[in-house]
Structure formats: structure tokens, C-alpha cells
Length: 303
Image (cartoon, rainbow, N blue to C red; front, side, top):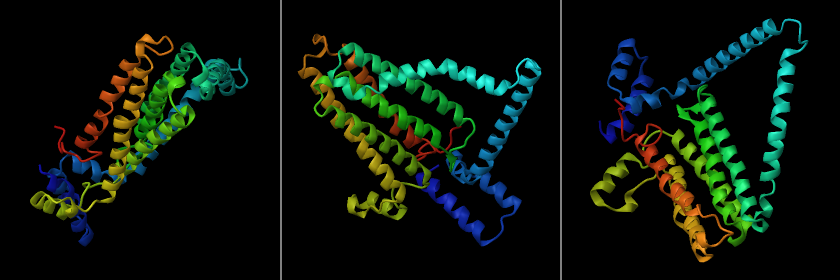
């Protein structure tokens, strides 16, 4: 498997199929000589069929759950479904109210003691865990697997990663300049990073036009490169991610050290541990993207 065959073979197949109606033998030969990366992209148009099948299966399951509920309660409960949802709402309401009261106080965190700031971060962690659990559950139905790219996972990352960056700011909020602007800006920037990454992953092919890439390998001149649409989105994502890793996060670490670090009772002693966890694990996302079929597909065959 080579990079050239990875992004040229699907295009050639489409050109051949557009000139004549493919036979079953042509299709079998094409599938035989296609690796996982090519099949991943080639099966992208099947997204509506998978999504509709998953939706109908879910509706069928809910229907039989309703029938089972009716059989179990018989005539003891007049409206079993509405009663179930009222019970669920009554159980969730105090927890949601407590969560919202803690999170909605974020504009005042730079005036609050460390205990309150850590309490808010605890609520943010709860939201992140529930969001990732929900994203994992929804991924089963493939409702946002456009072009075979799991959009639910990207949206889940956009929510959780932005809150993770906000936590780093909130924990040392009294010492962060322009706290509110910094907090809102970093959340928006992190959202943009993940959404642009998702849009870039929807495009197949390489980051650069194939002839310009071959010319660049020979000449070594950057001006010879012609960026594709995918390359534009991924380039914006990479630049934004680097701004987080090499500007925003070191800036927060510098503030932490300058204000006394763990010796300051108003600063969390575990801040550097959280900082290091985020700083060293986040580069794994682009690393995974480069080798996966959603990205550059460096590993063409997972087998």
C-alpha cells in the first residue's frame, strides 16, 4: 500500500464506473483490491441507509418497551408512559437545579474562594462524563456518520474539551487577566477547533494536490504545494490547536508559578498534574487522526 494508491484509487474507480455500468465482477474485483481506508471512504454514501435502519430499529424497540410496560402495569396506572417520565423528571430535577446553580455562577469565580471554584469544576466534570456517555450511546445509531465519519464523537469532543480548557482557567480564576473574556474565548476557540476538524475529515483525499506534493518532494520548495479543501480546514485546526498548547496553556502555567504555585493556599495543589494530563494527551488526537481512515489513512489496512 502506498499513499499514491490511497487517494487515487477511489477516484479512478469513480471515473471507470461513470463511463459504463459496472458489472458484479467489476465490483468484486474493485473490492478485492481495496484496502480498509479506501472501503471506508467508498461506503460513505451508505450513510442514509444505515441511519434510517438504526432509527427504525430504535422505534421498534421503543414500541415493544411500551407494550411491555402496558402489560406489566395492566390497569393499575392509567397513563404509564407519562407517569414514567414524570417520575424521571422528579428524580432529575433537583440534580439539574444543583448543577445549574453551580455552573451559572462562573462569571463570579474570580471572586470566589478555591473551594467554590473546585466545586464548579466538579460539576463540569460531571457534565463532561455524561456528555461522552451520551455521545457513545448515540454513535451506535450512526445518525451523524456522514461519509462514514463519526460526527457525534467530534461534537462530544467539542463539548468536553472546551469545558476542560475552561476548568484550567476557573481553577486559577482570581489571577487570570480578563478572566471572563479568557474563559469565553477559550471555550469558543476549542469548539471551533473540533468543528473544523470534523469538516476537514468529511473530505477524502490528501491535504495537498497530488502533483504539487510530488513536485514538493523533488524540489523541497513550499511554494510548489497546492492545498486542497481538506488541507485548509485541517491547517486551521492545527494552528488553533497549537495556539492552545503553546500559548494559552503555558500562559496559565506561568501565572500559577508566579502566584506561588502549590504554596499559595488559594491555588489548587493538583493544578500542574491536571495541566500535564491535558498537555500530553491532547496531541494524541491529531496523531490518531493522521493514521486513521477518517484522516490521512497512513495505515491503509487495519488487518
